[in-house]
Length: 341
Image (cartoon, rainbow, N blue to C red):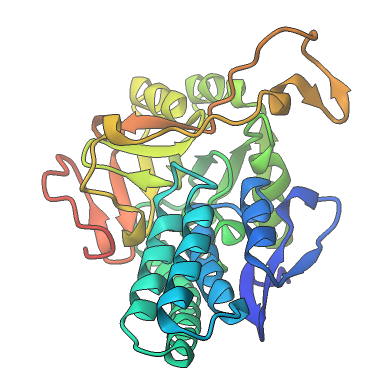
């Protein structure tokens, strides 16, 4: 059984190092904020809900490890640590959501002792809530999936992207739990292979039928009639677009062309209805992730690589958005405020 992706153990934040999967499952105990920031940047911890938990625990960790005894300087020090964590991944909204929620709890106190206790309590609450949110979301999504469905998914929106259960894979798990027989096609998700390494790992561990394809095979399988629906997660949902792993937009366009439902599974904390797509910074990562593969250089030296981590899918390509509170459908003219469906 896979342990929880991220949780607290006393004064340490414990998480699965996802860069090592599927070769080995290793749990890291983190005791300082800078190490947690490195883990987020390196994608040891990744996935929207998991980043929300990491942000919350990062604030709690900063509070726990602070040596400031005066309340004002203490809050300033924790706020500085929170800002450094927020800057690690600019596109995913849950990271900032977890940070802001825990900072608000901390700042509602009046002493250092109270602030530390409040931050730890709020972060633990956020982590604990995640499983219930994913379970409810999965159950709502399962109603959309017919028996015998062949589901395409992209990247990893499973237990490893949350504390447990998952969003897109939460829908898959809940569908199986309901008694339906389904199978999953996982896009490998270049350049870091989260679909091949993580999604396939999770589903294989759960004995849910899964196969892996190259990202560019998806449209061909749709053309052959081998895909019945697409289910993906999200890192941010604005009033006009879904931001998710690069390649998601391509699958949405192909699904529309072939008349295949395209579903997005995301908790309320992923909604960012104060912004439109043009307001969101898309993270661009180091081109070395593309230029090398399995320790070998695959792009000639001196040739630049463009490595966007996310893309944006217009809402008019989305058949439904599955949340823990229900299923949203077009025309999406009553989008919820973040965390408040």
